[in-house]
Length: 378
Ligand code: SF4
Image 1 (cartoon, protein in one colour):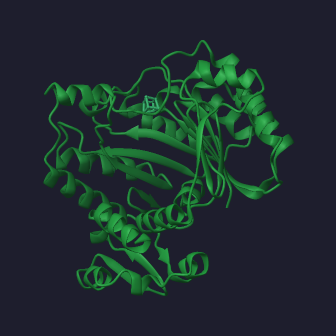
Image 2: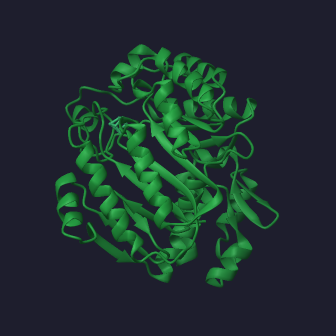
Image 3: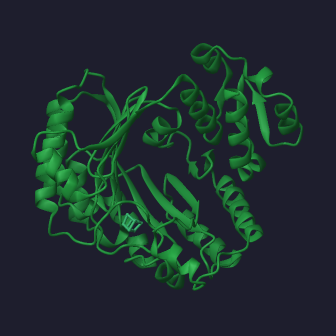
């Protein structure tokens, strides 16, 4: 697998909880697209011809770009790079920014998967999160996406939002499932450092839901989605069979991905790089003909092993033969005595030479994946 990520750093309005790099302005979009094209040219100069299997327009709000701008970018990409015939082309969309005409335009430019940041169907929760859309727009967006020909659509759902109750979460799940997305990403609200939400937390203006309520909500999410045919293939991700997000799997399987745009992170086998997290610094570097990398790091064999174990366990499982082949290690032996305990306690399945988390295991995923990674590296 080989992924390509493009970061589109514009939002109509910043959401209080978001720590992704984006600015609340659309006046620089035209210049941004020109600069992005230049960075793509620069990256193409060292391209080795490996076919990309997924492309992801993330942000920010990529759907603030006009379909003609997306078409210009995808056309340029196709002129420089090779893409597999079944390449997944995802674009993140804010439900408040789409029309049928725009969605049809994105489809024509090659986008074949959409990801809507729905988060909630409750007006109070949407307001708390500073979302620009309402519940009706989320539903309308899904209908428009289907009409525009998209048969692969994700919706994001947020839980553990202050003020949320088990009943409102149950209602959110019901309404989302009624819309029949092919994939659902369900995240517990995180209080990220540096966000307005975090500042409110420090000032005592918001009170997080108690941990046990968060855990109860996560359990409700897992059990409800499973009942409705969505299987869990990562701690926060659920899909209909065959609709797992290939781009995300690229990250979680430690496969390489190229990234462009301000703040974008790339990983090319053993090196990770990250671009400037500033539109102006990124633009200045690209326009001077330099790669806009703020820094990079080379990962040691031990780093790669730790990441491999951590990411695979959180996702769809650790393949024992693969660890033996890549790192020359016997996982079952290395993880004792914890592995026996995790299996007996019902947290981990050991099936067909794959260790994977059970639904119970996903609830203590951080603890298990961190401990397993440390044991393997030690
Ligand atoms: S729309 Fe998305 S990227 Fe923009 S601020 Fe909100 S969560 Fe962040």
